[in-house]
Image 1 (cartoon, rainbow, N blue to C red):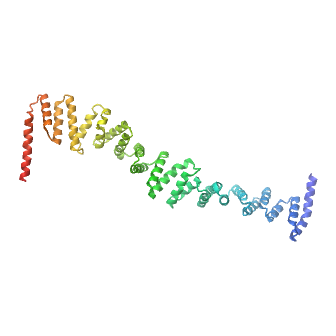
Image 2 (tube, rainbow, N blue to C red):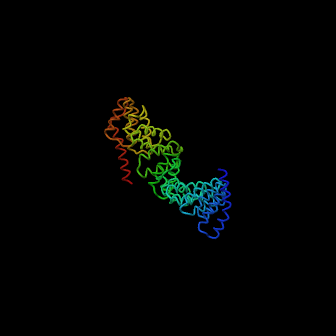
Image 3 (cartoon, helix red, strand yellow):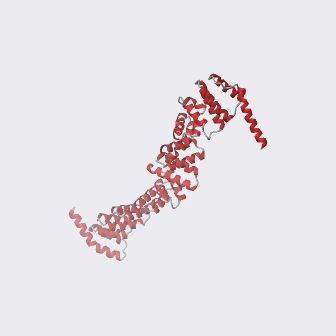
Length: 406
């Protein structure tokens, strides 16, 4: 076999000049003769050049690579990439050679060319690789054009153009959230971005849904939770509002502690979480003894059973003296306190409470009789009810006379 191979090489060398002259004279079949002669002689470089002349660029490139001539191979592959039938295969080879040489820009360019030819998901993935190499915005455009539902490209483009083109960025973000395959790690930032852009565009419902989803997945700021609370409130979403308020309460500034508890407590009570609501109203009063909504809520007869011993009395005393409570509320509080004093056998306390109630609501026969009875119980020298009535009538007459003379 070595002798035969040597004989072929010698024959090839001898035949090559004849084949080249035939080629120069345009003799039919001369190219094939020359190719055979070059193959027999082992001249791979010459064969590669000839194959390129024959338009067989992929074969020429393969010979260049075998010979270690990557520059020649690259030129041949680039020539092959211009031929539709061999373009995709040639571009893959160009990508491989450019990447091996560390040519990021050249690799990205070849990836984009391949992406435009491939289209669909393959094209989108090739274009995304180009973007990752060279951070070229046009690579994202190519990816989206190839496959509009390709989430990774839509997500990247949304984040990159959020400030320059908010409306387009919102469309990209929404497409990415609905598309696939979206990396789960990117979902929170896209939800947050979509919420912000939807709010800027005036789409409150989309903003509410995206912000709620972001708050579930991420760590929202108090400002974001406040915005979400306002959106739920406006939409009448009581479940969502309660959840947002609870999140806010955990890290809210001290200045908002009372207001947040006062809003959250009724929401919890509405959802059957009355004991939690009661705890919040108690916290409110520990922070602000004059918080009238908390007083009213805790003194609701429906919550009488959950109040501690002596708690109702203390709350009634606060309500009875509260400057912002209505006169009717205060009078009722004094009368309830009076009943407590009576039950405890404290006639003096009952009398004092009833006197306050009468001052606010005015006296009547029943009230006077009750006070007289209490006075008798404590062996007081208080006169008969008729004598209570006389000074009151005199005072009323004086007031009437004064009005007439005016």
